[in-house]
Length: 174
Image 1 (cartoon, rainbow, N blue to C red):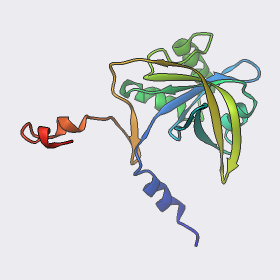
Image 2 (image 1 turned 45 degrees about the vertical axis):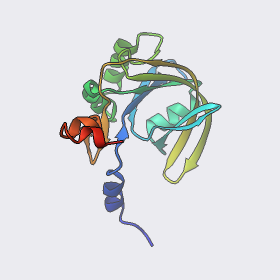
Image 3 (image 1 turned 30 degrees about the vertical axis):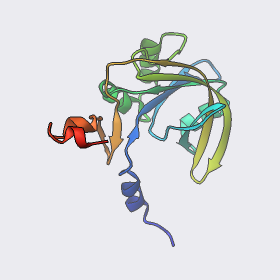
């Protein structure tokens, strides 16, 4: 049975995900970056992460030749950056913004919630996407900001569950 792709996309959009920007340099040394919501952990030993990119996307070609990349976990204040790096246009503007955000070393978005420097570990074709698996080489974290969440086609953030409960019910939640 063939599923209706629009309906499937809407159903899958009901799964809340964090938002990342994957950054690095291509084989010519030019900075690249794109928004990815498919980020996930794979293993703690060795420390592996994954994300997927649509086959034929410019980012897919760049990653295939990259010897390193960085996963930047975004905070709520990064929503405009996520939008900017989620578009296929403005590649020159994105390269300039990347240099401003990360410096010439491309060490990551300075105020990201988490920064994971990775080296390629594996890449596997899966349907219309390529799943990239990276081995984490270094991690950095920062505090004080709520995460940027993507759910049902819109940005959201988190609120601790106990903050949503009336004061008298708070102690009953385990």
